[in-house]
Image (tube, rainbow, N blue to C red):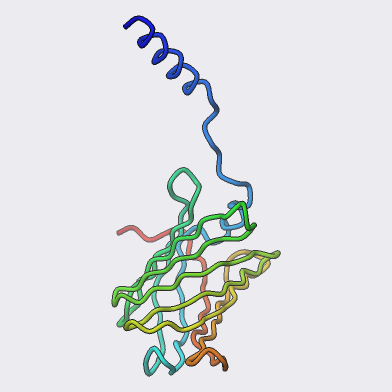
Length: 175
């Protein structure tokens, strides 16, 4: 019994001395997206519906000890959405997963070069997968950004999907 107690004690003590893991420095690239934003733009007609003008708010924050980024859209008159970004240190890119209120989801990967975020993945809507890709370009002053995306109805040709402009709002409105 004494041996068991000693083993548990030393195992616990050695774990307590191990440094806590820290987020990969690459995650700092997402800090430009943190904050409260308003947006205006258009979803283009295509395989996901008739399209139309869209506006609303976007809030971004680092979560889970800084290991992930979470963004949440609230659109006026249309669907809200949630996006999670995490860094994949093995492949040196970001995993991106987004979820809409109607069950649509996106899963893909992204890279960041300077102020440009480039992503590609698959949107699954109403049980059907569609290849999708896009870019987010952050302005030099970090106060606005422009997002565009394309979708492929059959996996061969690409058509515009979204075109949004975001403006950072200071301070964030109280709710």
